[in-house]
Image 1 (cartoon, helix red, strand yellow):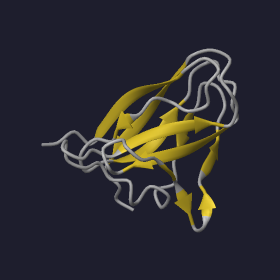
Image 2: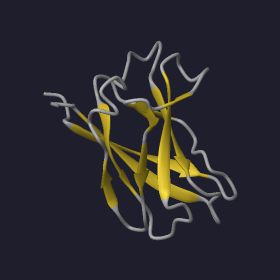
Image 3: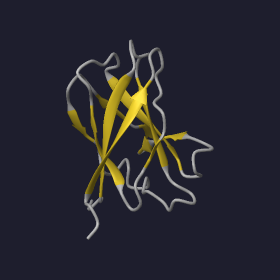
Image 4: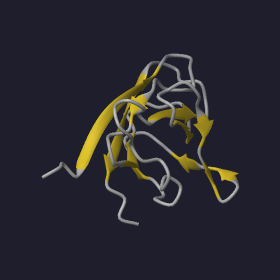
Length: 120
């Protein structure tokens, strides 16, 4: 039986706003972001590549770029409707995700992305 929940760490470098890419596991969607005990940005947006990491596009929901409010040491649930089309693909053309902080981070920050099956 397949694991229902998977987690992946992603880093936003010191002085940067955009994280390194993380591959979305096959047939999973992003469900939540877990923030560290120190975080400069107070909002988080998302970029997705469905061509193996060549081109990234912002995630939109109903015509508006999708954003969540974040803070330190939080488990932030994501809106399933915003990520309905962000499903992990095969290893030959993986779907990749980047997190975009609303502010340049004051140090390297490691965040965790929680992936699972979207039943919505």
